[in-house]
Image (cartoon, rainbow, N blue to C red; front, top):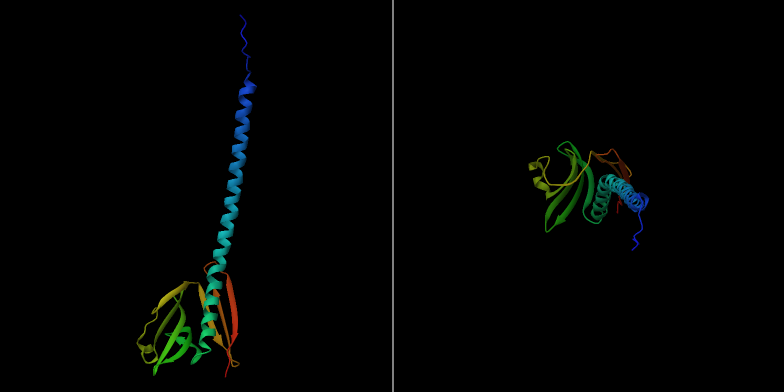
Amino acid sequence: MQNNKKKTGPIEFVFPILLFLIFTLSALFIILFAAQIYQRIVDDSSINYSANTAISYVSEKIRQGENEDGIEVGSFQDCDALILHNHVQDVDYATYIYFYDGALYEFMSEASRISDMNVGTGTAILEVADFSITEDDNHLISFSCTDESGNTSEAMIAISTE
C-alpha cells in the first residue's frame, strides 16, 4: 500500500503565518494612525473651547442685559468686571462677571451689598489664563479672553443707548 499523504514543505506552513502577521501589523498601524488623528482633533477642539466659550458667554450676557436696567464696565475689588444692573420688585440687583485667579467668575447680589463681597465670590464659570473688558465713549464694549494654551479670542459689542 502506498502512502497518499502529500509531504508538506516549510513554505506551506510559513506562508499563512506570514500573511496573518502582515494583516495584523497593517491593522495595528491603521488603528494607531487613527488614534493619533482622533487625539489631534480632541486637542484642537479643547483649545478652541475655553476662549471661545468665555467670549460667547459674556456676549450673551451683554445681549440679555441690554433689555434690562443697564450694562456697565467697571471693577470689582481691582478686577475688571462687567456689571449688569437689574431692578426686581423695588430692589436693585447687580450681576458681576470678572476675572480672578485663573477663572471667570459670576455672582449676583443686591446692589447695596456689593461692598460686602470679596474677590473670589460667586461661581467659577470657566478656567482661563486672562480676561479683559473695556468700554469706549461710543458705548462699544470690547473684551478678550486668553485660554491656558495661549489662544486669544476677542469680540466687540455695541450697546444701544435708547
